[in-house]
Image 1 (cartoon, rainbow, N blue to C red):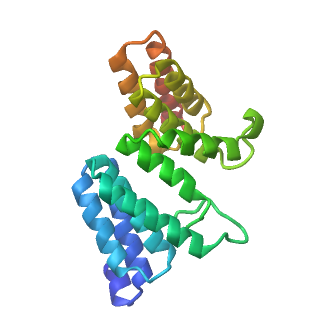
Image 2: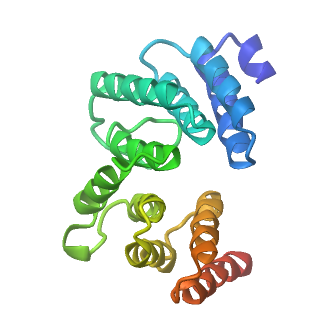
Image 3: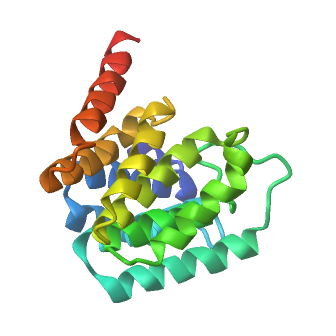
Length: 216
């Protein structure tokens, strides 16, 4: 971060703050994550990928804090900036190049964390677009993440069978990246708290996922 500042490279400095915001968010310090996200936004050049991603991070942090108004404002800003950015010639699953196609998945996650039932529609649309006919051919990690989002919002609506099915699809796909393991565990624990018959199978699938990760 110091090198970026000394080199007067605003976007790199903004990315440093944004990356820290995500790390801290996954640790559960949502207030600090929101603060770092806003700092990143204040530094990032207008229209840059860093500005969009930092705004998205603030929205996620706000959602975890239950700040509805601020969350919806962040979602709206991300959508507008994403639309203005346009689709890249060759989309990449690359954190430092914002892919406008991610905005739908971002909205699904953010609304699911806020507890807004509208997340279901967004999550299902992500899955439908990327997983036509049940065969995942493009962006399997995004499909897995969308299934976690779907499971979370279905749990909020007490639709346990559907939630367990979505969670199983995500975990058994083998495409839940290590940085999202905590999200899968969050769903597993929420299911276990309801004590449905599917809970042991879901826990077993999660433990197998973790074991595979440790053996690599």
